[in-house]
Length: 199
Image (cartoon, rainbow, N blue to C red; front, side, top):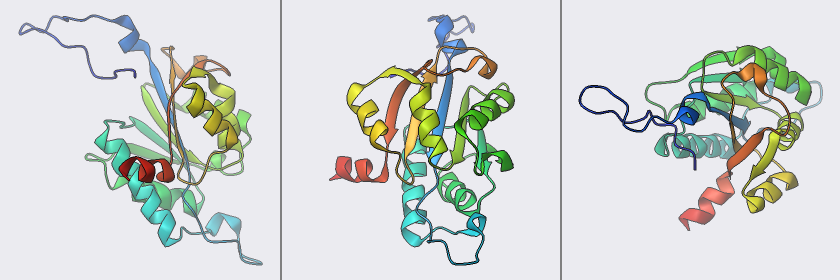
């Protein structure tokens, strides 16, 4: 597992473990929205809200992230109600709250469009969370990954469930350099896998 903590220093502030890779890594969190209500005839898809299970699952993922030090520097959230509510449920676990922006471009976006948004909007953030939708989020995750745990990669290829969290690390110093098959799958977490681990 990659360590995103700052290198330790001595009493004078000099680095004891100067490792350049710690300074240039970028970490991407891809979170699919939680389980939402079914579409109703005539009702806008964008307005679909989370069901109770969805709110609970999103909260579990947020608690897991905060408890494991997986804190994003910046968050981009689709404008769809189910994505906004997913982030609010997950964000309750973070203190302080990470900076979050609504990205209308994430709604109904193709994988290439999400990639372009990340490259354009990542800025100085070393860790970036994107809360969006399938199938594009799943397709992007698979396209970005070149290495990592084989079993986790196989599970991800099978699908990205609601509230599924994909964490990918990149040896780059600028989000603009992000490209397909350049990342390492650090972990793949779902509400179900958390329940299994706890049981």
